[in-house]
Length: 336
Ligand SMILES: Cc1cc2nc3c(=O)[nH]c(=O)nc-3n(C[C@H](O)[C@H](O)[C@H](O)COP(=O)(O)OP(=O)(O)OC[C@H]3O[C@@H](n4cnc5c(N)ncnc54)[C@H](O)[C@@H]3O)c2cc1C
Image (cartoon, rainbow, N blue to C red; front, side):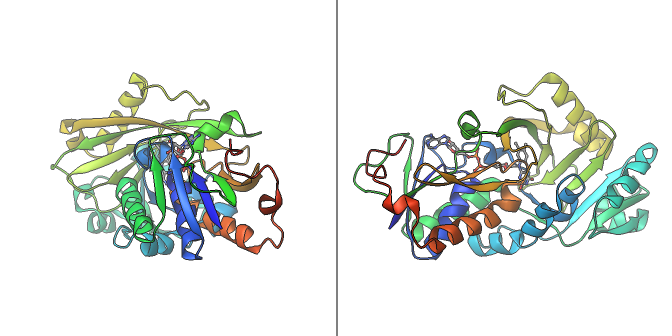
């Protein structure tokens, strides 16, 4: 049985990994010339189940707890386990209490401990929440590592064309097309996420830092080469046009509030990704024309793709008489 995965974002790559490790032959097709051409390339890469619980269902926490281990196995060396630090300006200190009340897995830390965790933030904040169990990764590097591992395992990629490979008949198709599925999937909507990269050697951070604010919360995720990913807006639209001036201003103001050194940083890249989401903001493995779809990863693609990929593999391998094997429409050329 050969399974075709449509979409080489984080959902498609994770699905390919879970199926190929079960001995299933997998091919991946993506309309773009490269892997990770959709929202996945703009993600913060935070594997932060406890922090996300503040605004998400309990399922996000339980499904996301094993995510860092999965990534360590799938893309060895890419997971950074240094936790998450949540800070707020003195006048917004109540936001920390509000955040803490909505989740768990943290310890309160005072000014000295903040300075020990992040020396460049010493003396700037009086108290913070530290989630020591959380992790992060660089999405572009992690996806590159996953891609290399998949090629090594014999997964074939067909990049740069929406045309399906003609030489194979597939026993199932798995749609992992991200925001492109909004047009065809009932209940799926787009949530626009804007972000930017700053570059400066004047400050270093070891872990994602989230600055709470009543209107403009932001996070900063350190990357290699003195880069910092700053994000992200949550706007109810599937408009993927360029980042707005307002969002850039708000990000830069907030980054400056974290540390004035960000005022001298170079703004080296901006980006926009559309997060596909259902009404409850939880992802799903859906029955689909000739197989399945993984849809609605919302703001948890890296956190929850491993769990969705496992669910997919269990459904694909566990079904005794899967409809996709018997469907007469499931023939080469019948795939849309
Ligand atoms: C600014 C921002 C920050 C984020 N931060 C985080 C974070 O810190 N942690 C986290 O877990 N998540 C985060 N997310 C969410 C995460 O990025 C998304 O949930 C995830 O990228 C969705 O992945 P996907 O594979 O479903 O879709 P995509 O990454 O969009 O991939 C879809 C792929 O399908 C391809 N495609 C589309 N149509 C077709 C077709 N017809 N045939 C073939 N291929 C097709 C596209 O080219 C694309 O490569 C963030 C998102 C944004 C925008």
